[in-house]
Length: 557
Ligand code: NAD
Image 1 (tube, rainbow, N blue to C red):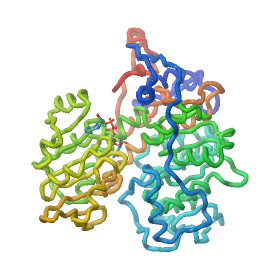
Image 2 (tube, protein in one colour):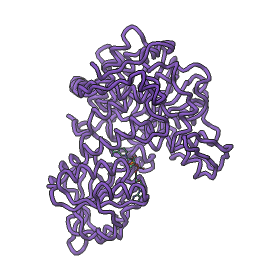
Image 3 (cartoon, rainbow, N blue to C red):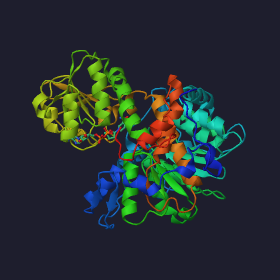
Image 4 (spheres, protein in one colour):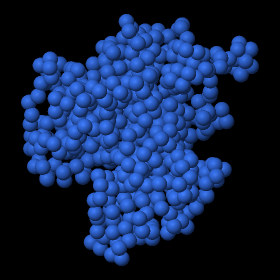
């Protein structure tokens, strides 16, 4: 297809050459790293200095270590098995990224259907292997169907599989992964397998595992240790079972939230001698990596996939634009036309939510702290207000800031009867839900993920997913968007695994822009999109290589 521009043949060398866009031409990684806003931001917060010149080059001041890394406490002994009640209470202290609820609606099974802990079951797949721990291996067939459905919407990973035939850029790679275990992750894992990697996998979230998908993966030989509704103890046990294996040591990490990386740092630091790199997807995990890097404790190169253009500009914006209405509709059956909505935060997620609600005829207000995003909201036609100004009149409040206590008890007290309150940000800190656990308020669970909180005068507010991510808790998210992120992860693994000695140091990097462009190009054929090619004359005029990269690192899209 005209849209697909395969990587230029040429200087790319080694097994990754077929899949990476001319790996040999990859821009110097340090240059990529310096354009990373997160990196700069951290440095500023820690009191360091960074000078940004107009062409985006950043001159770093020497690093100073001021902060100690802080991780959530975790249990490290598994022999004392908690009781059921004990297991629940344990999960309160688990790290935030692991407890943010996340579940696809496409689940055939309820985790309550069998009370026996998977850790107490003896299970084998049809080939006789018991190197896994899932809820019920017999659900594999259902899971396989889910994976096949996901494959239809993940064209780039399927294309990578085809291209890898004969050439295995991940041959010898031993990847230990800790991500949400969904059908889309399964497509990623099976792609990594097709590219030559061996994988062992745990869940990064105690609620998000699709049991039947985990079963399907275990059935096809992937050592998966995950089930929906793990306790904190189970959570760490599963991670440990992935890394603490006789005769097998990981040489690559794919993490979402940083818990796996942290576990290896704490328990098996020697493993890092063999590990070639870490690929991290989440804001939280990336933040932890930058902390390690600042403290001089990062001992392998890491790729920050979260801040890749193909993640941030697609996952955050389009995923939320496509799923906010679904999440609200499934939980409340509400009509959107004419309803007054306030969206807190006009970043990528906020922009997606506002666009979807506006298209449905809602009257949308925006709150912002940043004048640039505020001006964008105004020019996109939204009224910029303070939350206090509209809190009495709105029908829906949506937080998308990544911040804490954006909606306080005072706001909640002033909301009108039946106001719907929900969060689209990563963690459940945006709405002060804890402040609603007071004796004078009554909680009524009216549906799964829907609580009515009732005031003494009879006023009730509708709280969705207890303030956790609405779309990931209550609706499905578009597979095609996840495909873009998953492809970025796969390419980041290939790049780190095959990078020649010295290309990446012990620091956090962004994926080279050329690879971001390649990820996008792999998704264009789905739309029968026809990409224009630069003429020689035009390329010369713009000072570009005809095969990209097409934009400087500081370009904001
Ligand atoms: P962003 O940084 O682009 O946007 C957040 C915006 O909130 C910023 O413009 C910031 O100025 C503003 N803000 C901060 N504090 C505020 C306050 N008190 N009141 C009003 N505005 C405030 O981030 P983003 O990419 O939009 O992501 C936002 C959150 O959503 C993050 O926590 C991210 O992890 C999460 N996220 C969710 C999904 C999802 O599917 N639900 C997808 C991607 C990211």
